[in-house]
Length: 226
Length: 226
DNA sequence: CATCGATTTAAACAAGTGTTTAAAATGAGT
DNA sequence: ACTCATTTTAAACACTTGTTTAAATCGATG
Image 1 (cartoon, rainbow over the protein chains, first blue to last red):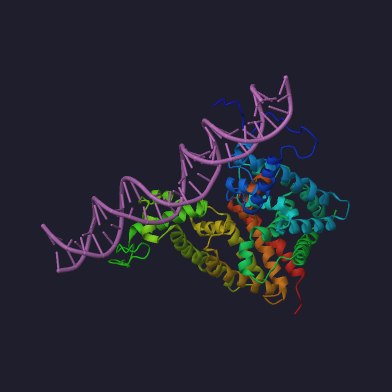
Image 2: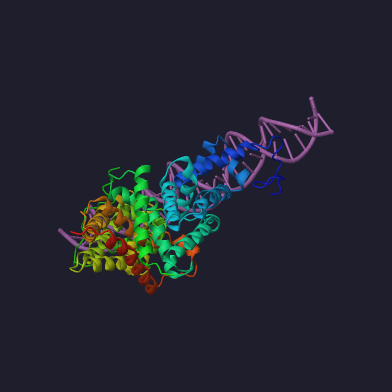
């Protein structure tokens, strides 16, 4: 104890010169961790795998982030912002007819949640967090999920002619979320029930169209005339 | 090697007397394993926990079932039959109006998948298998899921006036499954987005009603007149 | 060059996992 | 009572995990 070095919260002599890559080893660890966490989730990822991909020593994670969960927390906080504010929020807040906004957000969600490219990395992190929650889940929900859930309730409530906190409004939002989440969350099941299905971007667009049609049918029929 | 004892497939001198509980230690292991697997899933369950609950030695699992996966396979095969044939199939095959059958199967699925009682143990096993597939998943899908998926497609196809293997039919089945699975699979998310929600049986019935209404709205509107 | 804090390294640690081993106990058949 | 296959047991094994340690290296400052 009291060795003089404080792992995980060193005094912060960073940003010495040009404002760019300060402490590159730390950045490489974050980058490698994000990729592996997004691929396998928190529990199936080992600090040895992360260290190897980042060309760092096994102790690097503990030195720079305290422990594995500290590294994961930092990775997730960054990407939660990307999901919650940068990607979905602008789609939900654009000025357009509510039905069009709904269609677009369904398309965006399906493409990101089912995609495997670099742009969907934050969504894959969320996907794992949903399937196998970690102690960070509450924070993720607060930053990435609840704001969009609330906006979604406002949107669907407008379509229904009901307040955002009405039970029916919530259930409809869940019906839409459930349809969307089915494809990324139940994909191992789906792959065996319908082996021919290939989730190409075109196919994902057809699926998103269907989900929108399927949902709008109820929202229109149930609309309370104002 | 060649010790004369063949773990996992002993010669089967079982059923000596009354056809009831032959090899009670094996049965206790199966019972204990089913409970713990249903609660925590395959990977989070240790053979030590199972052995302790069954009042058996740590080596008992290996002796009677070869290895942990052998025990899990046997537990899952039993309960897959319960899910696939005993519980859902009769609901899907009853002679009634397709809409009523659909409503009833949605109710049954929601109650079982979200329940925590003894009757829903097989469904909790399936739930974990969906969220965290094991090498046994394919077998589970074949025995418990695909038959009902096919029956579901026939039912929804009849409501739509489309063949069971039409793309729209499949997408509609997925929309229904997604809405149902949302509550059990995304429950950690839901618990934080809507903390007041308590999944009582009455509430589950309201949810099932909503899912049925939500789905029927599209199925009726999209019906191809024959 | 010497100094000293920050970083990196190799090695070990402690805890947990599924599995195996060889001996002990069991119990029915002779 | 003895035999012998079956079952149970305690102990250890082999392996992986996250974490820690203490020494080595680095890098700017005096």
